[in-house]
Structures are given as structure tokens and as C-alpha cells.
Amino acid sequence: MEEMLLETLEKMVKIPQEGEYLEIRLDREVITSVGFQNGDLQRLREDSALGGSIRVLHPKSGWSFFSFNGWSDLEGKVREVLRGVKLLPDASSGVVHGDGLQGVFPASLIRDFREIPIKEKITLLSRYADILNGKHEEIVNSSVEYRDMFRGSHIATTEGALVYREIPDIQLHFSAVARRGENIEVAFDGAAGKAGFETVEGLEELASEVRERSMQLLDAPSIEGGVFDCILDPILAGVFIHEAFGHLSEADFLYRNPNLQKIMALGKEVSASFLNVVDDGSEADLRGSTPCDDEGTPGKRTYLIKDGVISGRLHSRETAFQMYEELTGNARAISYKYSPIVRMTNTGILPGSASREEVFKDIEKGVYAVRYLGGNTALELFTFSAAYGYIIENGKIGGMVKNVILSGNLFETLKKIDAVADDFYWNQLGGCGKGEQAGLPTSTGSPHVRVRDVLIGGQQSG
Image (cartoon, rainbow, N blue to C red; front, side):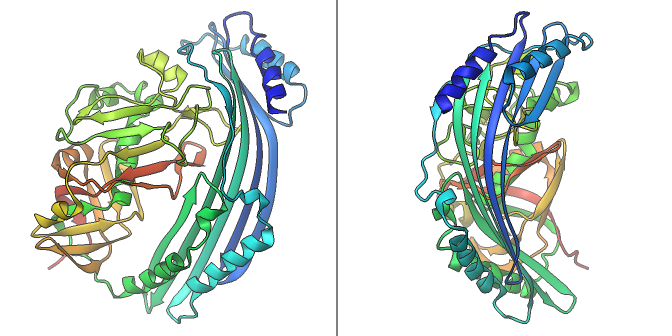
């Protein structure tokens, strides 16, 4: 069936006669979502969607994008969009041609979540909900959020792309809220993957850890604000490089902003030579991995920082054309309802040569910042809140602290990284938001990273 549909799409992309770029995407999705609140089932939904989109760039006008439900009269829709795009005013744009991928790329799941009865899913999630709730008087709220999605995606373009991809995605999120008087603390964790139901099985211990951590935070003191040597755990370090540097490397904003182009100039030295940062859509079996992006460009590894120097950025066909650079396979959309925009895939700091123990041992007094609670960026300025932290004394991890808020200038902070461990970890929990498109599957990765003289806010002394 998929091969027959691809043959039809191949005919459709031969219709343009005036040098237009034409892209057709057809998606079929099935989604299940389940939510427990305070141990009780609150939500159960099973949805499906069938639709597609057509995007055209006429060489003498601009872009036209049309999305639709169902797959009927594809040729009529293509011809209508091609007629309409000629009516647009003149525009200065274009695309890099070629590099269209061809092939069928099925998913391989150990336990296909589409074949798991909903009763079995609810039984497992109910067990986690009971553990999180824990019948402890200080646990005032808990939740278990589950979602699985399976998408069959067809792509055909005038650049030779003719692809069928199967894209599974499964997510499970735990949260627990503890309260003692006016003191309220939250802890969360979970699991996610481009994989089967096995991803979310056997997580009873993790649910218990989330519950216990929320209560431990009630007893943890707020850190006293100041300047500290700091170690970022792999999760926080990965989120930091994604949010603070990865988004600045997305060329759809970059090519319109001359000031940012100067800040992010290729060849600019930004860190010690042992720091390497990549975005890699070709990495196997991660949530951001893809044989091609939503323009049919093959996924690849792009070095954003190589040996301490800015060495690349992320492109769609249009931004690569505007900046006279190579395609990177980073035009992505969360569904057929949206036009592809420049997005990250799997972004991370590559492992260094130091052991985890070596990264810690040289700190007389500092902070170990763990996981990610929230944050914001404004060009090169950032503020990030760790989920929690620990005091480091004489290279040893001490007591837990909370309200660990890191802030500073991105490029000054990159210069202060003086050690990168060899214990790399991909974190697949969460998703990326940009514009109107939130929840795009991405992965962030890093080993432990040591940063000197970080401004950390918390409870101010004196």
C-alpha cells in the first residue's frame, strides 16, 4: 500500500512546469493518552488523524502552504495550490536543490504499543499512580501522564525525495507535589523513546524516587546566592546547550538578523578546544532521529562547535539558500498541519577525556546542579533553574540544596568550561517548542561538565 501511494506522489511532484519547488506530505497518526491524578484515572483518549499538506515556492513569487484532512483528490489540490501561488507578490527567496532521499523506513518495536490492550496500559499506570500518591500526608498532589503516538509519514518533493517513514513515540511523566505548611516542592521524572511499550515498563522504583525526592526537597535549604564553581549533570548540561546555543544556531532566525550573525560568526572561538557540540539527526533510535527531515533532506551530524570554534548551523532548504551554505536536514514540523521550520534533532555536548571523578575532585567548594526545572534565554543571556542541587566540598558531594538558579552570558560561560567528562548520556524526556509548534520530539545529551565562577541565585545571605 505504501509503495502504491509513493508511486502516486511521484506523479504529483512532476506536475509543476515553471520551476516551482513542490513538497507533499501525507500523514496517518494514531494516538493514545492516559492521565492519572492523585491515584485516580482522569483522562483516557484514543485519537486518529489522516491528512496532508502541500507547500510550493514559485521562483517569481513566494511560498504557499495548504493543509487538509483526508487524502482525496490529491492532484486537484496540487493544481489548485500551483495556480494560487502565482497570484502572490514578488518575493526574494529560493531553495537549495537536490539531496532528496528515497526509500521506505519502517519502525521496529520490541513491544508495539498499538498492540497492547488499553486495559493493560491502565493497569500499569494505575500501579505507578498508587506508588506516587503513597498515602503520605505530605504528598498533596501526584500525576502520571502517558502518551503514545505512531505516525506513518509520506514525503515527496520536486528535489527527488520519495520517502515513507514510520515514526513511533512514547512518553511517560511522573510528578509529585509535597507540602509542609507554606513550603511546597515538586519533583518529576519519567521515560520516553522512539520505541515500544517496553520503554515505560518496570519503572516502579523511579516512581518511588520521584515521591521521595519531593519530600526531601521540603527539608533541603535554599542555596545562598553567590559565585560558585559548578558541575552540571548530563541532563542540565544537555538542556543548557540546546536552549542557550542550539536555538541560536537555527538559521531561520539567524539569516534575518545581522547582529546575531556577527555574534554567531563561523570560525569564532567560543570555548576551550576540548568542547564539541553537535546536532545529529542520523543518530540511531533517538526521539529526534530521522532518515530525513520534512523536506526530504537526509538527516546528518552537524558540528555546531568543533574544537572550541563555531563551525556550523542548522538549515532548511530556504535558509541554506539564503546563507549560501549546505543542507543539514533540520526542516521539521510537528504534524502535517504545519509548515516545516528549522528545528534541532538530537543536540549535545560530546564526551571529553576526563573521568567523572576528575571533574569533581578539583572543586574545594561548589555546586552540583542536577536536572532541569525551567529557564529562559534572550540572545546570549540565559537563566536556568536546576531541579535541585548538592553542595560540593573538597571534591565530595554533600547535602541537597534547592532554588539553584544559574544565570549569565552564554559566551562568557562557554569560556569558563574547563572540564568535560567521558560519561555521556542522551536524555529523551521532554520536547522542544518553537513558534506555534510545541512538543517536537528531540533529545539532549552531554556528560558531566565543569564550569568555573557561575553566578547562582538562591537565598541571599545577610
